[in-house]
Image (cartoon, rainbow, N blue to C red; front, top):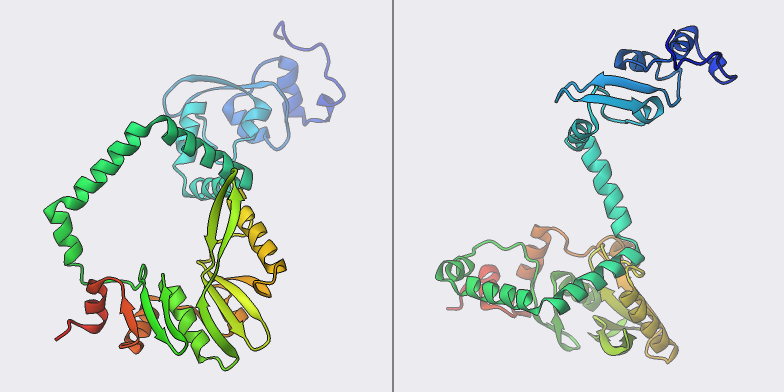
Length: 308
């Protein structure tokens, strides 16, 4: 019997199977084979000693710590086990989801925003260099030619003017255009116009929040903000400041309600879908020929052909 072996087992150790008790009485570490055999029958601080299967390094790890390994089940040292685990698709997916959840909290978003703001304030020369490089890149003839010759367009990033029955109105996205067209069809809509500009205070500075649309129904007036489904009313402190200002404006009688309209809830709120798919957007533009003036001529030519 080894010198460091216990004279007797304690109450907890007496509950283990005879094979585990024999190893404890010997006072020696477990081998990795014994760890694999008894990991469901023992959980203590006795070490497991083995040689790393990948790099050959000697390893000595407490039994209960080794049990916490979820993915790496081979006899590998900490460095090699990390390499093995981080290469697994399951781990990558779980880690990505966890990081997204953590990084999306209001506190972390504000912390990151302040860090970025501080970085650019302390490094104006880097900002200027990036701006200069970007301008140079877009002045290159090959880049300009590639932009001119683009023949395919998904229909996103479109802006321009639409002639509706209440007058001309501006749209800044395909979602906004789809919303305008559907509102014009409704019998209960009395008028549709661009929304008002509402002042709000953020970081002791006054900003303007320009609402997308003001829709006047027969029974009520709403302010509508058309956004992608990523929008969140409490996403960060700045959005909260906007929402507080809008709430105050509503109490002042500017409208009855303020709503967000996204591609996921537009159907539920108004009974129609926003043009989320490419062919939906192209069909929308084609159906509005003569009523839409797109801001950029190249898009006019793509959807309606060159003027004769």
